[in-house]
Image (cartoon, rainbow, N blue to C red; front, top):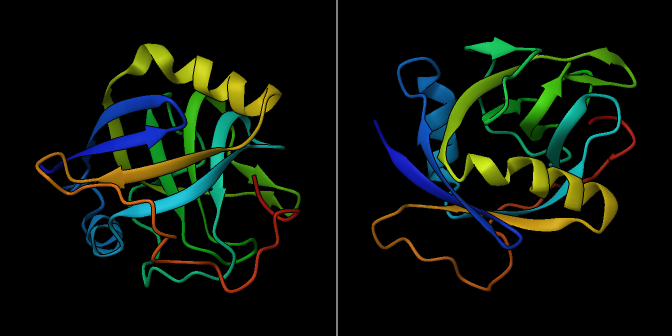
Amino acid sequence: MSQLIIRAGEFTFGARFEEELAPKTCAAFKKAMPFVSKVIHVRWSGEGVWMPLGDLDFGVSYENHTSYPAPGQIVLYPGGISETEILLAYGGVHFASKMGQLAGNHFITLTSGLENMTTLGKSVLWKAPRTSASRWPDGGRLSPRPPRLRPQSARPEMAG
């Protein structure tokens, strides 16, 4: 089971990949690491933060998908009726867009720092978007350079 570190604003979370349940999604995301993106608060889904990724294609379809991620679960919506996105639930979530209910692949679970999830979510909601970065815990360093992956187009009005 692979571990990773996720930084969102001033918060740091330990996490694990759900490789047995979502092997293709985990492999695709690992290829994109280190992954850096803006995090904004969801609009239709409840208590969650998301990273809108536009037309970015991870090359995966549904596996271990859910519309109701539990707090601390991270899901990847691979695109379709809405844009590609990554969502972190910090409370109750019913994953949706203005197009209707969505399901994302649960591929990462937070393992430490859980006490800061609600504070992160509320600070993103009431203060400003944060930057999130994922890296390997054993030396993969976070660099200040721009993200390796950038959405080709962003349609933030479609998801979240």
